Structure formats: structure tokens, C-alpha cells
Image (tube, rainbow, N blue to C red; front, side):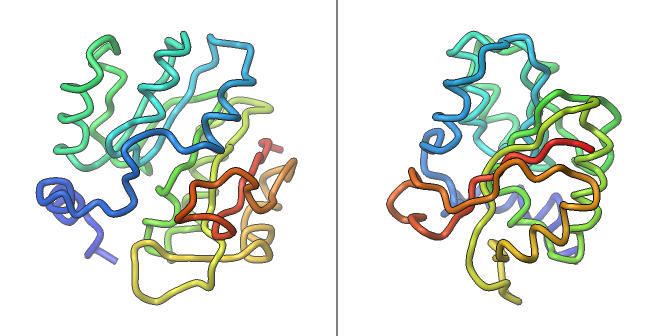
Length: 194
């Protein structure tokens, strides 16, 4: 499990070994963000990497958006690229050590990059970080759970079992607007804190 530590992720960003990075916000997340009316929501993007979601949210007038990543290289390059966001909105920290609360948590390739033994901890921590009726939304990969990763897969049944005890499942379905390389391989979800 320690393989996927701070040094591991820093090296991946340093060497640009970031195959999951598509260089922009993905269509399903953009579509969801475009229908949010409340621009004051406090939003967290865990394992944000190059923070394209933060950049897009900021361009759309959201001012209360935070990213967290353990990879200093990812945080620093995002800070350099996205100039108008306050520096304290870039959290160089471990998601599991955060002490804060958010109205919305946006998931994009973080969950699937975690060692699968941490999945229950992820669900607990997400629940803990959300305000009452807060939501977690985003994408989860839909392919058989692999032993080698990241990314690690999973399927709808696994996710329902994992999230249902703490979340009301509002949506969990194949994303209709995935980017081409991920077509039919990801599930879009909206989970509301119970």
C-alpha cells in the first residue's frame, strides 16, 4: 500500500507519467457544473492533479473551491497555471488528514487511483467532510477490479455496497457523455450524505 505514497505521485508528475490526464475538464463533470446555480458552494476536489476542474469552476464564477493533493509537483504546477485562485485553496495534504467541511466533493480519477484497501476509508472520509445534505459527484471507473493499477476498477454493485450505508444514491449510471477513450467505462454518480 505504501507504494502509492507522496514520493510515488510526485515522481509521476515530475516525469509526466500521467496517462489519466486529458488536459482539460471532462465532459460529464463540465455538464454537471454547468447546471449548478449556487456559485457560493464550498467545493473540494481530492487528488486534483493538474486541477482542470478547479480552473473551470473558477472561470464559471465559483470562488469557494479547494483542491487537495499529496503531490507537491501537481500542486505547484497548478498554482503556476491558475493564477486567480487564492494560494490557500491549493492544499498540499493527504485527503485522509483533512479537517474541514464542504458542500460538494467532485471525484475525478482519485478514488480509482487509491489502493483498493482504502476504499472504505474514502467513503468514511467523504461522508465526514460533507456538510448535512452535502453531495459527492463525479466518475467511477466501470471495469473489473484489477490487482495492478492505478487505475483500479470496480463495478456498480461494488460501489452500491460500499456507498449505500452512508449515502443516498441519487444517480449511478453509465456516463452518456464520456470522453472517447473512456466511453462505456465510467459511471457518473451523485451521492447525497445521509
